[in-house]
Image (cartoon, rainbow over all chains, first blue to last red):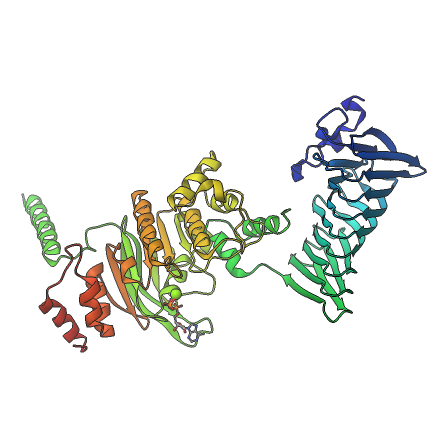
Amino acid sequence: MTDSDYPEEILQSLEDYNIDMRDFLPGHGGGAKLLLDFNKIKGVEQIEGIILKGREIANGIVADVVIKEGSKIEEPVHLCFGVNKEKGIQEIFPRIIAEDNTDVKIQAHCSFPKANGLIHKMFGHFYIGKNCNFNYSETHYHGENSGALVAPVAYMYVGENSVFENNFNLTKGTPGKVKIMLDIYAMKNSVIRSNIRAFGKNKKDSVRIRDAIYLEGENARSVLKMRAAARDGGEVLMYGITEGNAPHCNGHVECSEIVLGKGSICRARPFIRATDPTSSVSHEASLGRFPQKWLDELMAKGLTEKEATEVLIEAMLREE
Amino acid sequence: MSINLDFYSIFLKYLLNIVFIYLNNNHFEGFKLLLELKDITIPTEDGKCVIVNNISFGVKEGSIHAVIGPNGSGKSTLAYTIMGLQTFNPTQGKIYFDGIDITNMSLTQRAKLGMTLAWQEPARIDGLTVPDYIALGMKDKTNMKEKVREALEIVNLEPERYINRTIDESLSGGERKRVELAAAIAMRPRLIILDEPDSGLDMIVIEDFLNIFNKIKNLEMTILLITHREDIGMVADYGTLIWRGNHILTDEFPKVMLRYCAKAGLKEFCKRTLFTNDGKCFDEDYIDRIFREEGTL
Ligand SMILES: Nc1ncnc2c1ncn2[C@@H]1O[C@H](COP(=O)(O)OP(=O)(O)OP(=O)(O)O)[C@@H](O)[C@H]1O
Ligand SMILES: [Mg+2]
């Protein structure tokens, strides 16, 4: 496949995130990859230790990724879900399995630079075996028009002694209507770190994210961090849920949101529940504006209040 | 002919004036003041009490000028007011920076004129990297990386170890304070106000800080140094003593320190530690006289 087969607009669209999608075209850069242009598969590249298959269906694809037992995958696996249209429906059904003792990083890039009424749905299943190191990052860009209607749902099972890091970023461009639901089940001795970041920028933006972590195995641990900013009438609602249902498990939920400008709404709801007396779950939530002292410190360096706020939002939403 | 006479008489007066100033050993006349406070009175936020009462003094360009005084005497309040923080508004008086009246200027405007403040307890901000933070105030951002390294080196932080860090809780107290200083230095302001840069640091580190001050001074920045510690203060050329919101004295630093000791009745301390080094000693009689004036002998 030549580069020009894949829309240039999509390839360039994640520059603000410092991601150059050209690197993920088959034949460029290393790593396994799967490229989707709207409902058509435009390229698949497998490497040793990974099975990567896509099957086109009516409005999208079923994507299967299997990391074979014991494989330590050096280069990230790239899943590029692009749409270079204003409207239409794209549906993705990823089924991701990491067999025992594997080590992998999967990066999903969902880019819809022209979106204006576009619908993107995802229904994902993740199964992570024992002793795995699994890192999943999803980066979204919904253009600058009115965004897209995006509704991903994912179930994630994290096996014994595994470490799962989940990152979701929707901080550039205008999101549109976004409704995300994640359920993560953590087994014995597993460690979950889930980071969600979103930025609503105008009246058309409404982002609702519900991330739930169920600590089902003894000594499972989790940290859920949700960060959001809403400005100029944007709306961001975040529900961070953690349940401690097993002995000695330990979870923490942190929601911080910043509201700027008239009509903007941020709502942060940490929801914690412990059904095991030896478990501990805590939460922290902050809403509103940045502390005046932070602003003062930046302003003492010559920034205006507006510039200082931009710097702080950028920092807050930065991937760690 | 009469015009010429006038001219000579004015010139003569001028010369006499200079001799007068010299004889009076008054260091604040005839030099350029970078910062000048005139009759500044600062109320509490609710406006009910006065924290700083009718204070006037000047800071000479290129000097290290210490502001000393006991806890709660109004030093930080003064620093915030000079910098122009929103909730610190003088009810009376004027502040001049390089001859410009900045009393009604915003914090940002003052910073842009070339002054900055390093806080006593700088904030911890997740996600803001050390280099980004240091670069914030740079006027010219070309060769930014190089300039960030330079600034880190001035405050004795190894650049390699800090360029990938963020200014969050993971930095130690001393590291965070140094990064704060580095950020202030990177701005290349004409005036840096340091609010207790020494607080929470141990003696060995203090030595290091004195070094840093000298480096800053060599970069032709003026330092307004708020401190509790006489050993830190000793780097200062001049000092101002504030006592319960009132201005007591502005003079060469040792004299100011002596007055501070006399007011606090710390005679032994004063003799033991203060004026025995650097040839800046006072004779016993002089010390006794000052203590007597303050009624603490
Ligand atoms: N609302 C208020 N009502 C009464 N007193 C106040 C109010 N706000 C501040 N003060 C007082 O103003 C004084 C000045 O405080 P400031 O922080 O400037 O002192 P400082 O000299 O910097 O002290 P330190 O050496 O402890 O840092 C303090 O005594 C403080 O209690
Ligand atoms: Mg103070």
